[in-house]
Image 1 (tube, rainbow, N blue to C red):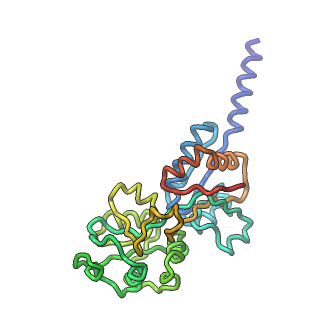
Image 2: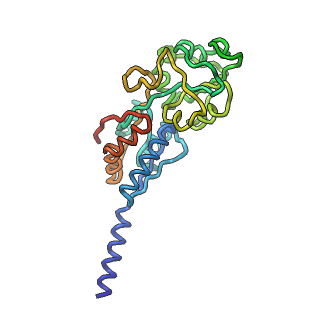
Image 3: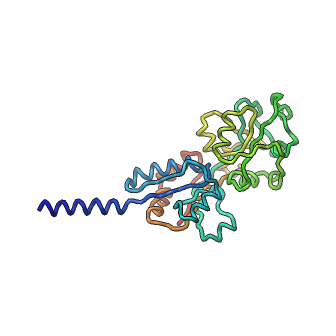
Length: 268
């Protein structure tokens, strides 16, 4: 009898271990905080599964490459996928919209600029905060690579940015975290990121109004700078399906809203 009970227990343990799955995510750095929160909440509900969100930004192209190579299960992209990436038979699933922001160091006294002034900063026509009503201090402008999700959406948001050639002195930062670090630590800085990063910074830098509008107007459709947070899929395991179901659930939607993002209805 004891032998039978032992066999049943061992069978249950083997079954549990076999059912455990790991879901690996990586890609756009701006999505790391939100997906980390979703992953932690998911694991509380489904403790047999493990969600691993790469805490180092792979960037959108890096995430797609890792997904296509089978290194991760879900790629994070804050811009969907490109026409070239569509040829890889990938499925982008937009889960949320997040407002992009033009942020400045805390020592900057300017609170609002026009989109044309923003473009003039990046083209090199405006080089000093004094030209915008601020202190007499050189502007240190930061940008991101052209393939970066935030940069792609930044160019789409403001008409004058679409084909603008950035001045040679504009400093190009490789990773999302690099932009956060620059805005937190460098005086007189300006750069683009998102409201989730702004909230997580807890006042270490601040957002500018552009053309009299603020990022709070995203929900009303009047803020042009938007990041489209997508989870990109290739092979949908049962665990991946469970995770997407959780993101779509009221609990998942509440986490998205709590991060100042707007949930997007989706199917998969």
